[in-house]
Image (spheres, rainbow, N blue to C red):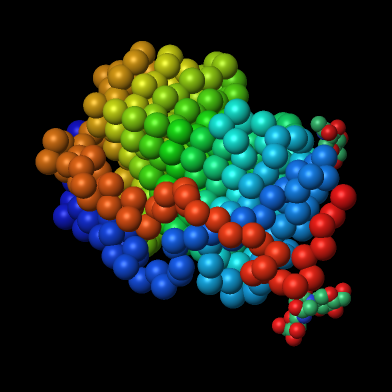
Amino acid sequence: MAPAFSSRDCIFVMTLFMFMLASSRADAVVTSTAVLISVDQSGNGDYTKIQDAIDAVPSNNKELVFISVKPGVYAEKILVPTDKPFITISGSKANGVIITWNDSGNIFESPTVTLLASDFVGRYLTIQNTFGSGAKAVALRVSGDKASFFGCRILSYQDTLLDDTGRHYYKNCYIEGAVDFIFGNAASLFERCHLHTLSEGDASITAQRRESPSENTGFSFLGCKITGIRTAMLGRPWGAYSRVIFAFTYMSNVILPQGWDDWGDLSKQSTVFYREYKCYGPGANSRKRVEWSGKLTDSEAEIFLTKNMIGGKSWIRSTPTRFKKASTVISNNSTKHG
Ligand SMILES: *[C@@H]1O[C@H](CO)[C@@H](O)[C@H](O)[C@H]1NC(C)=O
Ligand SMILES: *[C@@H]1O[C@H](CO)[C@@H](O)[C@H](O)[C@H]1NC(C)=O
Ligand SMILES: *[C@@H]1O[C@H](CO)[C@@H](O)[C@H](O)[C@H]1NC(C)=O
């Protein structure tokens, strides 16, 4: 039998979303008008490299900064440092902005894009690590709080998305990889995302790292779609108290009947929190699921699927509608490149 849903689990979920609700009120940032910086490889913008635009943002920035990137392949390794919050990097809906690099080995050193600042927004970006199979090769590391992503494509093979720490929201994103390709210890909601697994055996999509009952972290997938090339698992516990929920998610037949893996450690079977709710498709058949995973009941699921979950939207900011020129605000040095 699946273990009963404990009150502790319930408290986690409520804390997570109360957190999301509460956070919005604290922001003292000016949200009416964003500082606009343009990046264009052809030389018609303020900068030709995305990193140069980030470097132009002053330390301890308190304004919204909207970095608008023209389509192109940007072969850059990008860092948004801790002292530069409130940055948006935005491509266009056509997904024409590709940020690409090839690095591998260390999960903190290999990422193509590293986000340490809070209040980051990524829109319509393809972020990829082209290393391929054989070693850890992170495309995107998200370590800042209150980060959100819309219409992004995040691509690698092993350890694609290091969803490291903080609260994050991913909407309409496509995430591809083979091994543990969504991993880390953040508290994240993935809404209407497409997860595509390149696993050919029993590699896991997620490796969530919650390590103790006191941590308010976990991955929640809502209304997502899972496809792949062969067979895969939904998750395995990087941390003993790993927490992952799939709700209203389509699962193709790539998901193996047992669904979840204990990473070779029986003791984790009693500490993980792996749940499914109203998922569908050939991979969602629960008959042969490992008995230490389970289903959410309707009342339990309500926490994930109603206003409590939408509460995250209060810190998820909408696209600014008014802009001012970077040159008058950011620094009086803003030389045009190219
Ligand atoms: C990535 O770099 C490795 C060397 O570190 C090289 O062997 C490989 O061919 C590169 N892959 C691509 C797609 O550039
Ligand atoms: C540039 O900024 C510095 C420091 O804020 C200021 O003292 C200086 O007058 C500015 N120069 C111009 C040309 O605006
Ligand atoms: C402006 O440029 C000068 C010379 O390159 C540099 O020393 C100074 O730090 C810059 N100031 C700012 C505010 O970027």
